[in-house]
Amino acid sequence: MVRETRYRSNPDTIDMIGIGMVLLTLALWLSFIFI
Picture 1 (cartoon, one colour):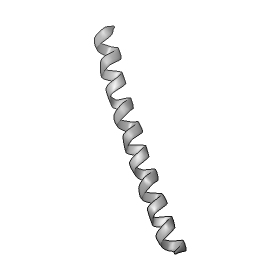
Picture 2: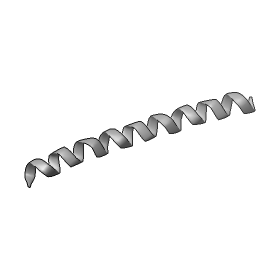
Picture 3: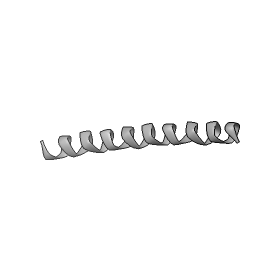
């Protein structure tokens, strides 16, 4: 059970970082378009 929770927690953190990077890139693109 402990191993499963560890393997499940790792992808979640990676997904959060990936989503954060996508949001940052979208924000930069929007700022460039509006400027």
